[in-house]
Length: 75
Length: 75
Image (tube, rainbow over all chains, first blue to last red; front, top):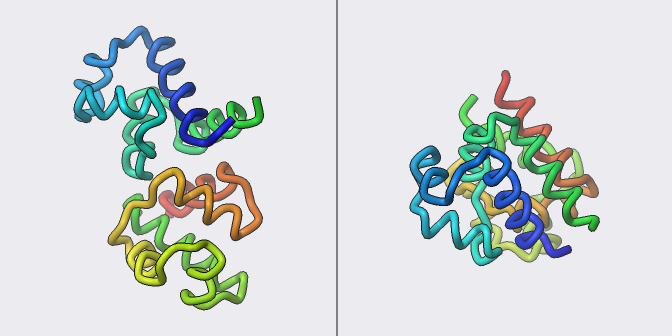
């Protein structure tokens, strides 16, 4: 699977596993809900800073987040 | 260490270990030399797409690249 789509799937899955809506995710990350939505549709490639913030919201390390994306790419 | 500075250090170190100049790195990655230089000074936060391209140039996985950045942050 293509990189941004893999990231999109992982982001959506982890957000839903946390029981968060896009609006709640926006509040916790301080990103605009539109940005979350664009990333979940594979329209935006997150920056390293964004990835770090998202990993913190999910309570995992950057490496764990990226590893999940790489696993998703192999599907 | 702060995230972008950690990434900057890792990028510079891996490039030098590969024996590449910034110009050669630019050619291999298809990024502008100025962008490489800005990342190596911590002025730009790379996107996920950029990180993937850089990992490919270095012949490592995205996870390995990000893990190196996280190790650097702990210094």
